Image 1 (cartoon, rainbow, N blue to C red):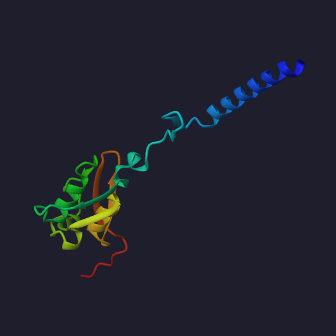
Image 2 (cartoon, rainbow, N blue to C red):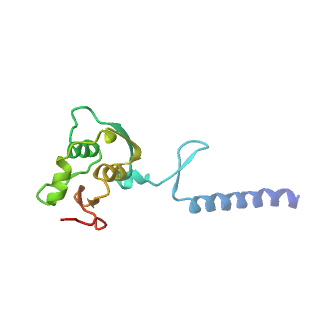
Image 3 (cartoon, rainbow, N blue to C red):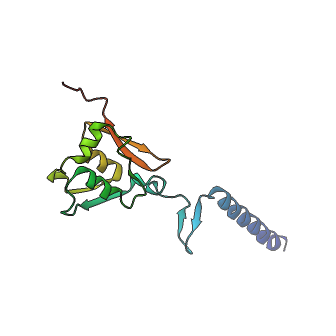
Length: 145
């Protein structure tokens, strides 16, 4: 008789303890269905929109590097920095014709796509506070005059 009473009590205590431990250990997990759980964390591209994976073909009316970059940034929440803060070299980059090899780009992250279109001569500069992007000459480039 003692065994018949003790067993259910021990079972209830152990079940309660394990369920309680599960809740405390997995506070970053949210139950989305009866048997499914997801991490309670945003995706990397939600933290940083420049990390979204893109794949696009530019429309025929996009003819310059600057137009292509503005097209890529269109839905990202970022925009190109004002030409008043860009160097003369960066402004001339944006005015260059878009190379045919860049007409179709991706899949790659948005920041890599921007760097790819700009080329090795430029470094991507990001202002995350104002959500602006620009370019500056790479320190690796040797200028010949």
